[in-house]
Length: 164
Image 1 (cartoon, helix red, strand yellow):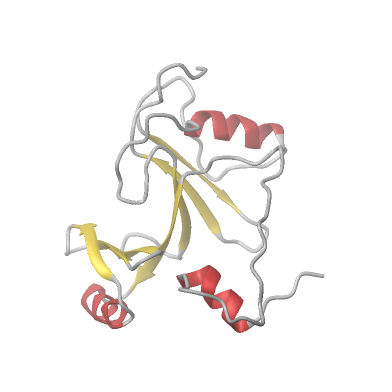
Image 2: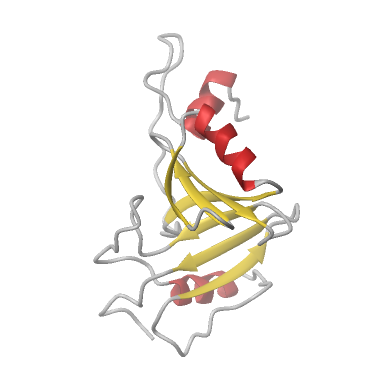
């Protein structure tokens, strides 16, 4: 049985400098069938962008990007969130293949179309699909068993040397 303490959970969610001496960190090996989904963030559907910005700034987040009218991307030391006003009806788990945490393109990564193909082979279904005939930026959405949307949102072209 997997057990988390509050300290461990906070460490996972927001980063931590060090765990108390009574707790030990373990290294988890990625399974053979793991996927490179890309940089992770949570996209929050907010009612008032300015109020949400002030709240998350009080938590130590700083604006990283956005248009300041409809959305903001904010980061603290280890976490990235997007605040989206009137763009989504629910919060979304977001992965960005091809980007590092600073939104810089990566030289190699697993393309969203290849991820989609693998997920289809594993029997998952999609709300929206990426056009597999394209090579530019693309996205797709699937929904987990609890109704949480997961957006795979690739902003860069397919890396050279990958399958089409």
